[in-house]
Image (cartoon, rainbow, N blue to C red; front, top):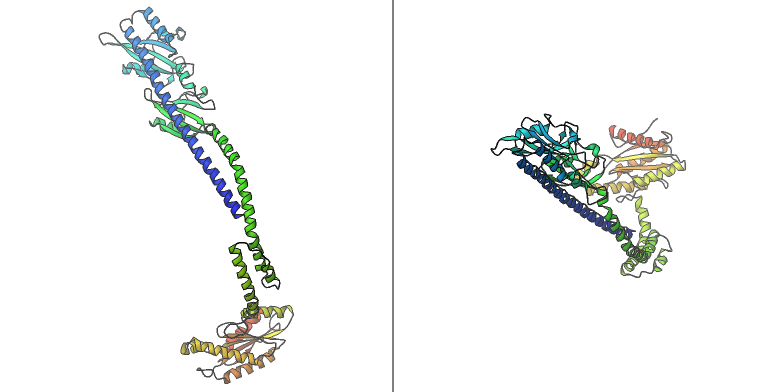
Length: 506
């Protein structure tokens, strides 16, 4: 399973890496393409506006000495409008803002004085103007392009202007409306005030767009590329550039999903071509793993049963065909022999105190539980050596250990056949006396106290012990409480002068 998991991780990582790299490359390429396209459109738009201004400049020169000739004015505005489809309308305005001629006549503004944004800006600047978009006198959203008219003496006489209606077909519409991708890609244009000048959805023309990261960068004069969400929440790859002539931002966008269409086809081909090899590899891994693991599994099964008589025979039957399993087999055979020799000793040592050979706390707990299960009544004698700390401090811990061992021998000699003497702490001992009343336990405790008092300890001389007695279930049906009462009697014996026996009285 580890080999298969590792293989799967490698394969999945490889596919993920390939997918990530190809995706990154496709997105990067699409970003670059959109920026190049937006930049090209920005330059083309500048060329278009330059051309428009050149047409107006030529007409301004023609009109310089003919502003009083109505037929020439009417012919010239028609010529400028009809010669190309650059302008939706053309008009000539004098210095008083009066319209001298207009094309088409359907506008019906000839003879009127205009106070629109484009007219006032052209009069004020007396220079070529490309206005910000605004609503005209007749209600059209337009861009106003004008060129001043000067007489031969240099006197300012007015201007000739062409308008581009942003919501009607024009050369600018055709220029911006064609995108080389037919997959949901589109172009839109904003002015420096974030107003939409061109958009595939004409209902949005003239609206101001806020909270758009690309538009914010464009109005700050930046050019580049970015991944953004459009107004419909669709992830788009955008390239943006600026028309220097009009200070318009031109943004070319392509849906992320459309840019990544080749990725799906590519990854399918990769999967189809690599899948057979991957399957064969996994089959080989399974076969190899089976061959390698079979001896190990048999040895492991035998290791779980090393204490059984048939284990050695089972290990001998394992076919260890490679070095490592052969060495494990040898080690297990050696271990089985050692194990059978040591199990007995370990079982004995598990419940014995290593210093005294008496039962330890584990043995005490197990014996109490056995007595409870068999409903055996018992008494306990808790024992503590008086002033043992003084012995350790005076003679050292080695001598203290010898004192503990001698005391353990005395305990073992005093105890009866079924009594269970245990060492439960440093100098603390406890004896379980099954089927023994407190009165009898007190006699045994007194005999033990006397024997200890009369014994001669190496280097130390005479020692004494204090003892406490309690009984189960006479004193309590809770064993923990009985043990606690025994400790309390031990402390009482110490408090009353040591070298004495105290019996718990309910």
